Length: 241
Image (cartoon, rainbow, N blue to C red; front, side, top):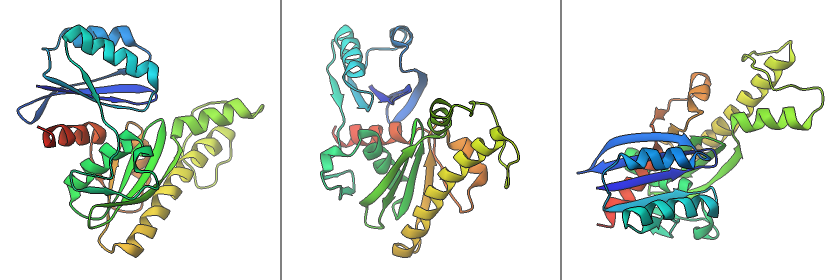
């Protein structure tokens, strides 16, 4: 039995895998370490703990402490030059975020071909895979909520209020909301066109907690896959058995 953890900047997602299936899933706020301990207290002791962590050393320390309570070490995933069918062309392969690496592996096993891998969370990542499984590079931009908060925090007369998408907004709330959505759509769709110029049959794989805000407005076809990072961690863990 394997426990998978996707520790992001805002949330921790986890899955318990038994005989190749994710039999239990959960998510909590990253700062709620007590809630995490309570959730894991109800789980059977895993044989292995596999983690993608992009939230820093404090988060890693909390997870190691949970592993000690179970008598288990914790394995932290990091990007490699090549793994599970994906080749890493990053200038420094080990500097690619573990969440992006796991998502790329999951997308490759989902599509087995060229694709744009989009993960919408605290940050939005837009990464490209070739038809041969080579990571071609990608973008990192602020997530939808981060963009909106940064405008409210950095501009005296702009408030963080809920708005609606409009072609030509006539109030500030709609202007902010529409700007944030259009900026994200622009990044995704422009990268998709660039990838299609290199890889004619490329597809788009979309995941992440904020993806539902983006999906209705995308102009190209896409596959929505829940918990892409957790899927990638499972593939990595099973390949190492």
